Amino acid sequence: MRITVHRKAHFNAAHRLYRKDWNDERNAEVFGKCSNPNYHGHNYELIVSVTGEPDPETGFVMDLKILKDLIYNEVEEPFDHKNLNLEVPEFNDLNPTAENIAVVIWNKLRKRINDKNDLEVTLYETPRNFVSYKGN
Image (cartoon, rainbow, N blue to C red):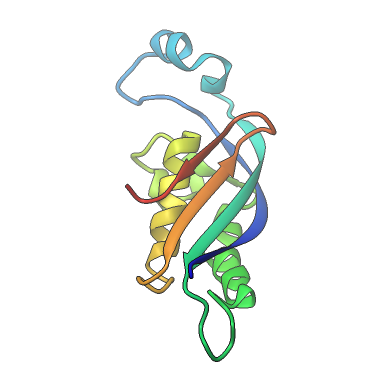
């Protein structure tokens, strides 16, 4: 029997979508107002899902307190109220699109969650725009 547990979290962050090798005109053409040179922000909503077999002793797929702490340490603390382009090293050379943010979060958490469990990250950039990543 495999069961999925979910933990929700949120963080607020600013970013600018652009390519350093393109001029402002080309960036504006491709990324629109998201390429504002003065950045813009989002209230990101995050859902981390872990799927696996419940432990026969505890009944847990994963202790949600441990998952809460992992999300706080690996995502909320380094990303919340930050400019992703300027203050988060993973985005020094990576455009902080919702897709790329989800992959970065997944990679950070994957290292800390038992390999026998599947991991999925769902990231809402707005209430209507969201991405999911399962590591494939």
